[in-house]
Length: 419
Image 1 (cartoon, rainbow, N blue to C red):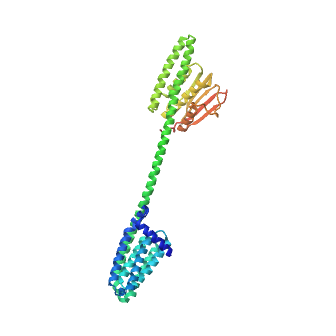
Image 2: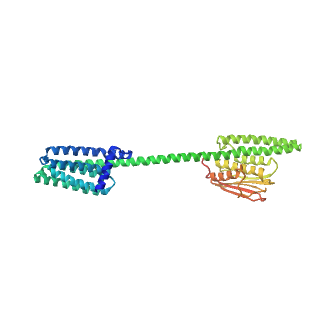
Image 3: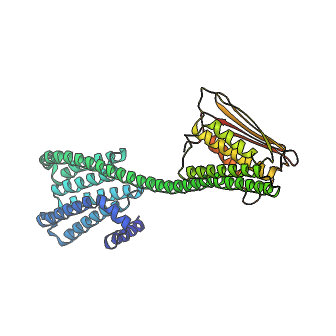
């Protein structure tokens, strides 16, 4: 016990001389109460020491002052031991014993009222309105009239009961309200800390969301540039190669036809590039006409024959984002056939049902192994997978060497990319 007291005395000195930020914050919550408590007990001690006839003896006076100083010190030590229930109870018991000793030494009833009122206030302030707190309060309320009786008998008891009852009632009500206010402040601080943590988490989520948005935008722009500029230029190169071959063959009529088709492709590529840059959805285009134009441009090189079978529901409109992705899938697939498949025949089938749009592109070309990684710079297959994810579509790629390639998309018409 004495070791704990010495330890808390050192803590008290550290708290007074050089408190930390956390200690200053904790002191701010109850320091004012203990300062007032110390002031009142100090004044009462001086008045009693000056007025009490029993304290005319120097040794009795020194003992009384020492007991009161220790009693006041224990108030502050109990303040430091908040959270340590065993020490808090020990301090309250020792304070009660010291209070009775000081009262007996002085023989003054006002000291009894002041000391036990202070202990009641400290108990409610420390323990709130718990069962332990009320047990201690009742004990001090019993000790107060008991000390009156010890000092002056029944006459003193009767004379001091009326002011004691009114003082104790007011004090208990005040301390309960004070404790409630203190608990409200603690809850407010806890909520403020939780709000700060939540704000920090929201800030972290915002940063992560921004990074994901930027990454998504980069991927989207990569797809759009690949499906517009890259494929458009690739198609122009193929047509220019065909033009060169017709010129070498002196087939000027066919060469002129290829030149006109190349100009049309260049205009369409420019238009689609502008639409991609401006993030347009091509709402003003007719889906069926666009599909026919893409197939016609594909057949213009005369390297591969292409068959088109398109059946759309006249009464049901295809969502713009599904049209957009379906056009891009068709454009990419036909470009791949031109560049890599070496196919003689290709077929495009597009069927619209009540809730789905099925797109199938098939060729009888050289095929490839889908399990192998594509060559560097070829992003078409990756674009297919990304578009399937964006539109929540079913995507299937069937191919093997010398067996041709089939690409199938099943777009849901009631879902898709919201952005």
